[in-house]
Length: 65
Image (cartoon, rainbow, N blue to C red; front, side):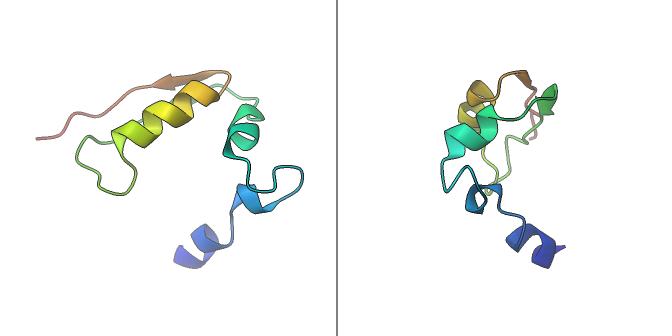
């Protein structure tokens, strides 16, 4: 799974060439982003920013103790 994750970087493909806003803005399906509030890698703050860029995305944080 790590190998797939490392080699599946949409930002490294045409036409995005490192442009996160363009890549996320190109997503054409309804998306639910569900970050855990305790996740130190996929943070709630990052998820809020990414969800705001995606055209049909909804943020549903999972509140963890």
